[in-house]
Length: 413
Figure 1 (cartoon, rainbow, N blue to C red):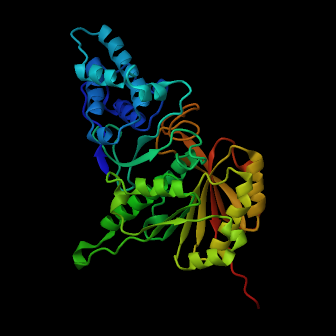
Figure 2: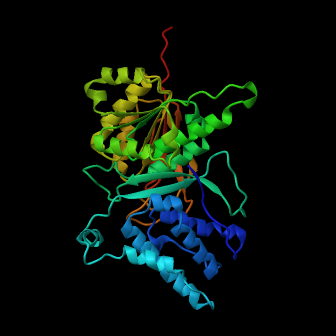
């Protein structure tokens, strides 16, 4: 859904106030406070009033960050305010900030909270909210009041939870999401199949794009209502992950909760090897036009099943292309994927892509080094050709997007 993402403040250049907006975005996405900066151009009242706005934010009170994250953030915020107040007279920190912070401090009478706060405890699951700019909105550099779309997820903050990595959102999803925002036509009117849907991040974005395009493309002069949006098929091999995906898609704060045509399916890529006819039958009944996948190339043992699934879908199904977001962590795994996928007539070109939210190196939150806000990641555009593929065209620790077109049909003469 759309939200007012910031408020007007008193001091500083107008185009610099985006830095305060980034504090809101970082807090919502659980970016570690050590990676959040506030330039010295802002006065105590600027920062104080903005932080009160975060504290009273209706959305973040209904879908709050984890308690242990909030504790670290508000401790950081109080330190910032106390330092700013030393340089200005008659500045007083609102008691509501202190009161909220004290409620987050573990009590000796609450063993559960103490366990969560202990160094050895896994971080608790949390709501995480990401902000993105719809493609039909543009803003001048000095505009302060902006309305963003949001994607809210309840997800794991551990790398592996319940025996799977699918309960958190990974970096390639953000890059692929920005690619789709900049190329809305790829999904606006097309039936979509996502492989390894995970938390539902891409599903929520695609549903939002389809609904926004559906609302804005209708011609009011002909008196006809716009058609129902295309179907989105969200799949995963893990029932727990698929349940979490469905839960997030149906959160009332997400525009996807209003999408009438979303299907959830258990899909094991190994079926493409053991029972390809069954997979082909499923695909034939879906009329899928585009296949998406983000961070699905990470386990060498799953490369052959993934490639087999793509092969069946592109050669026997109705899909015209597949877009696969790949984070290069291991060149050997990438080389293996490229070797397996080499049956497709594709070649390599490069283009940049803009990450949509502040993230660290391995996802939306958690460990690792934080990347700069709005960092550009190189992407790989694989287009139809008979040229060979070399893994050196892919950059380490970057997000790359592989475009796999439907193989050309061979005609006898």
